[in-house]
Structure formats: structure tokens, C-alpha cells
Image (cartoon, rainbow, N blue to C red; front, side, top):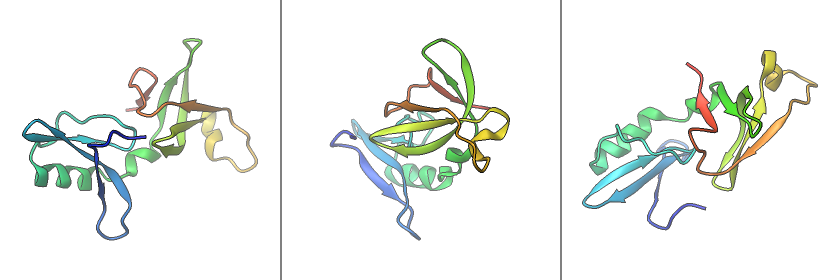
Length: 121
């Protein structure tokens, strides 16, 4: 669940949720679909909207490194993203997208801490 002051920003064409604009004093912050703030985003309303539009959702298809509770790191792809939590799917040798494969899944909290999940590249 998101805090009450987070304001959804949806893409105009298909109403896809792109993230949230968050009041920060007299200015605004940007939070992506993983619940992570983007401190480099413009802090005015229009700039925050444009930032989210440009950010889009393509980053959700990227590969990530998941740091498990045992300290081991695994390559993963995101299988499900919502404010209820995020599911990362093991992507060893492309297993996350292989037909008939049953890769390991990891349930992560929302917002996802950078220590648990970081983008490859």
C-alpha cells in the first residue's frame, strides 16, 4: 500500500501507471513502480510528470541482481510488480522466459530496497 500523499501518474494513452509524484515541502519527488525515489528527477510538478513519462516502464523488463537472505546473488527478472510486493524470478541462463521451466521465485517487499534488488548494467 502506498502512503496517502503519493499521487498516481498514469500514461495518457492507455492509463498505465508509471509511478507516483510525492509532495516534498513546496516541491515534488518522483517514485517509480518499485517504490524507489528518484532524487535526480525535477522537483516541479510538470518536470516530475515529464520525468515519469520518459522513465516509462521498460526498466521492469531489465535483468536485476537479487541478494538473497543467504548472501548469495542471483540474476533475476521481475515477474510481478505491485504495491503488495514484487516477485523476482531466477533468470539463470535465461530460465525466467524458457517455456516449461519452473524457475525459483522470490517475493520481495514494496518498496523494494536497493540492497535486495539492483539493476544489471
